[in-house]
Image (tube, rainbow, N blue to C red; front, side):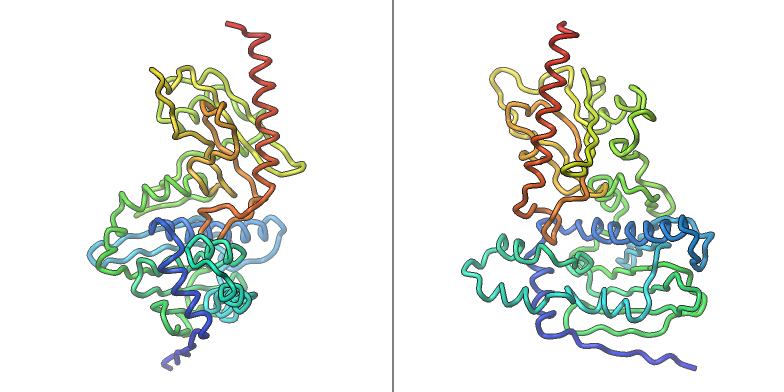
Length: 362
């Protein structure tokens, strides 16, 4: 029998929020790739945790991975994962309703705001998890096919152009566990179906996601996040290789410092001192700062709040799960987390430099 689709209208306040998200929030369109990969990685993490606990999931032998297929002629990107999947109710809650826990409160605060700039909008919506909708910056239509991990669950197909409404219809019977997102690109954004552009975005933002990310069958994220590995499992060669990858240099560093902390803030960091100085003839390098990650996803390329300017020669990364971000993941909310991390890092760095001066003066 033919399957009947249901049409749902976005609420008025959701339409307003969608317009803000698509037109005023992100400074770089390619972040939609990062957001969808981040969501897929979360779904895969949940399945892996369930399997470790011995809980039953359908299609238990599926590899946990993210697969991206590109069709330049059709101006289409397909991003698939073998993660948790969704039921119909979860689709309506997680996809069909933006910021279901506080859309009205957001708009209320927005109406009280005296400033109308993007920065204030960004601050206000920092607590709403709506990164999926960044896809509508480039998409004229999006279709999601998903099936929950529950063996008794049906598959469902969600379709929307991101403006006024969305439809849900029962999906094919033999749909495997997970989620498939089909993105039909606008003509002006068809370049995002180019393999080099997608791979560059993955390498920039999502290179250290623990699950394999494949583009047209080829794995892209080949470098591991060694800062999250035990120091005992790493040798000098691995540290040196990561430094060369991080800085695009051929020479090994002078020294490194690997820091893992749980209190008062949980974070992991690897910092390097290069053998050579970037600054010469009085030239002052303004492009300094540590790469800031949250759960292996790049948030800021050069965070200048983690180390003081006089330590600007330091290269490295910091990864923390305690970081409150705004919705675009591009701007940090006002927080003491970065200050506390910085305090620990600077103390460790100065102590390390002091030991070098004492024990390896040359």
